[in-house]
Image (tube, rainbow, N blue to C red; front, top):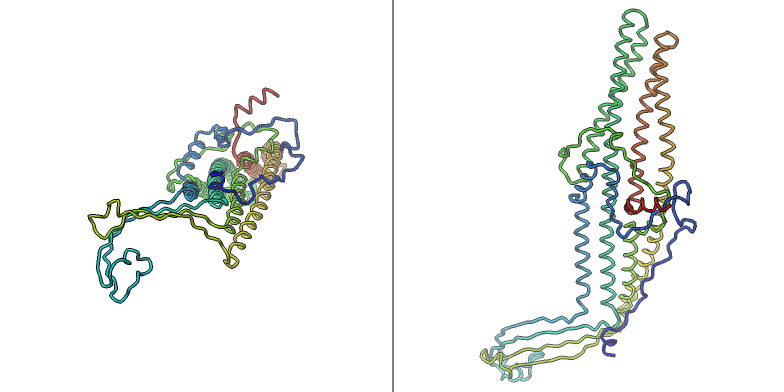
Length: 482
């Protein structure tokens, strides 16, 4: 009975997970609608080092450096510490508050007063006009009995907000890893595009030299020379632009990893040299979305808002506290700590809100409105998560088809260039056909590299969309079972 009195009850609704707006036919999310393929269960820990599946030590080092030194992530870490400290301090009201004090006062009583001043019990026995010393030492006690759960609901809210802050940090880390991965593959794409442009420029310059010799011999007109010069100039203009884009991309990687500008030693390397396709499950269970930090963050904020409703309701009820003071008081220093100088007062106090304007009602309405806002945000976040995963799965499936067509285009354009060059030497076509074939080859090779990079970045986006990676051993074990 005593325990029930001291613990009291908890006002407000207990949190219940809302119904998730998950499509009924999405037991698994698949590429191209397949449902009988490999699926992956949710592992115990979502913080899987999924980027290591790309088998690129250079990328691993960049990501590890970013996780250690990125300033946004470090700032988020300190916000987590702040939120945890607030949650820890929120429960302090459940315990008695005891403070000590000591004071010395020199008192002179008015000569024209014959009653004790308010609050001056020790002066009531001193004659008017007298002076004396007053020595005080004691303890003050205040303990609010959380009968309605206001303090406990507040602690519940702060704890949920602390967890939400940690999920926010994890979300920043996940986005950071994705940005570094995408930036790294973009850098390698630029390296290969620069290599392609330089190679084609060299071939075009060789062709220009041959054409110039034939023009000097009077075998062809100067128009062919000018057309060749235009093509060389077009290709040559792409080279410095690609170099500029690479420098900018390296600066972004340095910023993401917390490094000083121009301090990362990232040598040129074509995209084809770093292309590793991780194993991607054909089917992804919808439960994987529960690992997304943004969903977990908004749900924890929803828990906090739910607890704030109970906290707001508790303000409508009386506040019951135990208060007391005790210690020693004397007008003589040598009698200060004698047992006869002790004093003590203790007893309960009750504070009942009678009229506070619209304060308590407004506080409750604000708490309920914030809960409804977060509930809509929670549902919106889940729907957005499904959309993102569906989009990237569709992109991965179509990229593969696109790559097949573009590889065929590159091969056909290279063959067409050789045939155009042969026919031009035989005088069967004009040099305009040769120029067109060379432009087509350059465009096809650049677009192929762009699509290859896009597929890699789509894989990075998939890892981000499902809130992390999956255990490779778990993936292989399930594949063996199937």
